[in-house]
Length: 295
Ligand code: GUN
Image 1 (tube, rainbow, N blue to C red):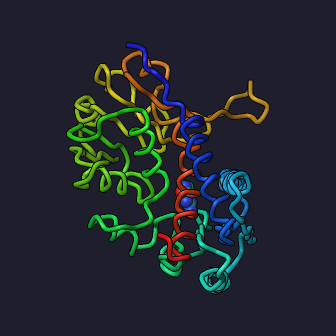
Image 2: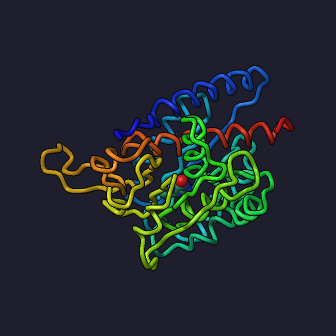
């Protein structure tokens, strides 16, 4: 079998067009959704993510508030900025780009964000609500993956899903979302990680594989059942002298070989990545609606 490619760029473009129309309608009522982005330091990958997020906001008409701070910013200064943004009525969403420099306490910063503006869905209040199945901001990458599956016609209910990776940003939340008793859940989920004894044995059972380990070639063709759906969340830079910038991006999946066995597969780049930003826009628009009593 040769896999059909799940075109994340196209799905993201469709959703962004829907959001753009919603934003235009809100503007007629005097409501302008606003997103504050906070970046501490000079990490090149984080810088490019933040730039992409700000550009996406502009594209659909969301007000974007850019806060770039030097790498030696102190905890108190960062907490004060979050506090100021919490109180700013023009801001509906606050995103502190992770990872933060090592000297900063990430959990303390995330806890400071008003849960009603936590468009990343990382605040423990939103995480807790998600786990118990209450309305909450859902974290963007897992929510984007679910949208990709649904919009590609993949049946989640009853599927055997194997997730490789247990991060707070992807592995843990997507596992939770997929076991919810609702129309985007009802899957049977296995979460594999660095201490899993026989990764291949688990992955081979999967109807849907979600690779979020952060390591190239974590999922190889011998681990993939014929006809499985493969979602590659990895974004890894590997040296490539033939490229002008000196590297290329690869996912966690051996794309060429796995494409021969899967029924559907996401490419890297152009798969999950565009969806993450789209769901951030989605949450920001939802937050603006809620703040205006329309949520
Ligand atoms: N770093 C990597 N992914 C994310 C994300 O979705 N949100 C934030 N804030 N930081 C990240």
